[in-house]
Image (cartoon, rainbow, N blue to C red; front, side, top):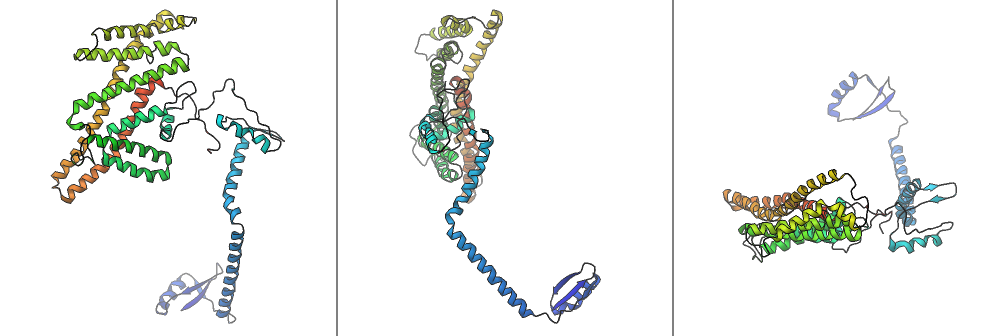
Length: 456
């Protein structure tokens, strides 16, 4: 049943639709709100309303059809419209950064050597445009555009976290990529969990190509060392061990990790010497500095002395002590020796007393640095052992739960925790070894990254 009522104050009409059974309740409710009935005009014809509605619907359908026809006729234009809007927005932003007058725009920037010819063609392509190429700009250091093969390219992201290389030092990406994959695999060696990383990399790669590529590479490394360790989702009885079981050979693994660290440190020192002497022409730091040849000699002497203490040094017992004394002399007299060799004056930047006091303290710093660098690599073996031990803890929990379905659930949850938590920790520890132990010897990262307007 329908009831039309009118509110006198607001002059608004309301149509109430309700079942006939509740007519009395509705009347009481609306009366308390001051509503009064208003009769439907005799001229009101519901059929005419329906006809008007049908006519309006037909007009709407005709308009929709016309809109669809316009869309089909201009489909290519509409598809390019979003790109055109984006182009004009970026053009406006670019113009704001240009020097400009009433009849010209002036823009300067950096162009990769491989794109210089393409850039010169712009002058012929556009009227009233002039292109000038300067090989070198005084007082300006060009940005660095890294160029690595596809295997190493994703690791540029991690290198740039530390800093982009300048043109007076080697690009560390290739060495970083190889050593980081080795370090990660050694610390997180498991075939099953490595395959999970590889599988996840395809899904993550759809969202972020760089992260997906990094995850795939460390997954491959983890899988390889998982084969070497004979570990599959923490279980060491499913596949044969091709090299060594870390948990059963703790001391061997720790010694091997330090030995591997020594090899990496020696390579890092030589890269640093090459950068400083060959690239930067800095003999003072390259030969006599604690990150140069003198620092390398100090590290070697430190190792030889330790080997003599444990009676396994194949070389003469006094060689380590001679190298240590020689390296200390080189570091203490670094500045005067280097400047006399290169005929630079003055010999000292400050007073002699201040210089030698500072040099004495640098010897202590260098010795502590060598010791901490070598000890830091024990974490590689420690994490390899810890990786197995963590799974064994969950295995014990599964047995205490009585095995069966509950035990399987505990093992699955344990593997998820290991993959997520330990995988992240190993990722960070690998970066720490690269950044603090190795980069400090050969890489400064004082350059600036090349950021092109167009990546193509």
